[in-house]
Amino acid sequence: MLGYTANYVDRQILAILLEPIKQDLGVSDTQLGFLSGITFAIFYATLGVPIAMLADRSNRRNIVAAAIAIFSTMTVVCGFVTSFVQLALARIGVGIGEAGSSPPSHSMISDMFPPEKRASAMGIYSLGINIGILVGFLVGGWVSQWYGWRAAFFVVGAPGILIALLIRFTLKEPERGHADGIAAQASAAAPKFGEVWKLLWAQRSFRHIAFGCALAAFAGYAGVTWIPAFLIRSYQMGPGEIGTWLALIIGFVGGAGTYVTGWLADRYGKRDVRWNLWVVAIIMFLSFPFSVGMYLAGDKYMTLAFFLIPAFAGAAYIGPSLAMTQALVTLRMRAVASALLFLILNLIGMGLGPQAVGFVSDLYLPAYGQESLRYALLTIMFVWIWAGIHFVLGAKTLKDDLERAKTQGLGA
Image (cartoon, rainbow, N blue to C red; front, side, top):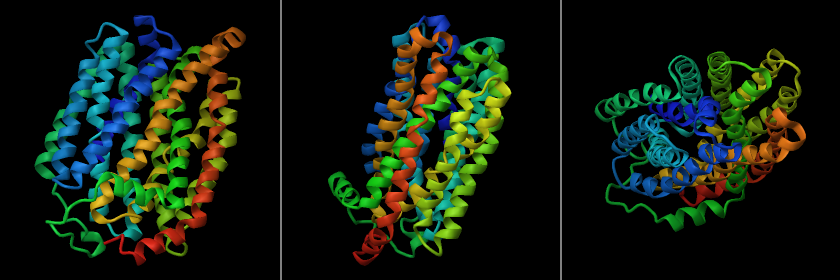
C-alpha cells in the first residue's frame, strides 16, 4: 500500500499543477489532456503486460521495488523540463516505471489472503490511490503556491527512492498459492499471454468487469485530473486551498469508500458472490446525481459538498473487480490477469478520460468561455451510468464463470 501510495502521488501530482504549467509553458487544454492522459497511459498500460509476464515467472517483490525507483526518479526529472515535449517524455518515463508496480503486487496479495478476504485486502491496497491523491494534492498544492510547480515534482518524487529500498529489503516474497492451500510447482511454466487472454475473454463476466472498470476510470480520471483547474477557473481558488480541500475529500472520504466497498463485497459475497459486482453498481448509480450537482452548483462550497459522494465512489470498483479477476485464473496467471484488466482500464480510462475533457473544453470554448471546462466535465460524467450497467450485467454470469473455473481447476 505504501508503494502504491508513492505510485499515485507521482501520477496525480500533475493534476494540481496543470494550471501553472499551462501558464508557464503556454499549452492548450487539449495538450494538457494529452500530457495527463494518453502520454502516460499508453506506456503504463501496454508495458504492464510484459512486466506482469515476468512477474509470473520470477521474484515479484524485486520487480515492484525496481519499478518504484524508476517512476520516482522520473518524477524528479519532470521538475527540470523547459518545454511541453520534454515534460511529455518525462511523464512517459513515469508511466514506464509505474507499469511494473501494480500487477505483481496484486498477485502477491492474492497469495497472502484467501478468496473470502481478498476483496477487503485489495481494498486496503487500493487505499494507496486515496492516500496518494491526498499527499499529491496537499503537498503539491502548497509547494506549488509557495515555491513553484517545479519544486512540487522534486518534493513528491524523492521519497519514492526510500520506499523502493524499504520494499526490497523488508518485504517477503509469498509462496504462490499459499492462501488457496495450493502449492504451485516451482518448475511449472507460466502460461503464455495468449492463453491468459483467451481464458479471460471467454468469460462474459470478465468482459463486463473490464469495460465497467474502464468506463468508471474514464469518468474518474477525467474528474480528478481536471477538478483543480475547474476550481481555479470557475471560483478563482488558489492551488493551496484547492489542494487542501481535495486532499481531505479524496483522501479520507474516498479512502473510506475504497475500503468500505471491499468490505461490503466480502461480507455479502459470502452469501452470494454476485454482490461483489452489485455493490459497485449500486454505489455508482447513487453517486451519479451528485456528480451532476457538483458541476451545476453556483458556488465553491456547494460544489465541494456535492463532491463528497462521487469521491466516496471514485475507486470503489477496484477491490471487488480485482478479487473477481484473480478468482477466474490459475496461480501463475494472476499478475498477467491483473495487467490485462489494467490494460483495458487504463487505455480507455486514463488514456482517453483526461484527453476527452481537454478536447471538449476547447470545443465548448466559443460558447461558454471561461466555463467551458465546467460543462466539459459535466458531459463526461454521464459515462458513470454506462459503467454501472456493465457491473450489473457482469453479475449475471459471475456465478457460472467462477463455478466453471473451480470445476476446471483454474484456481489451482
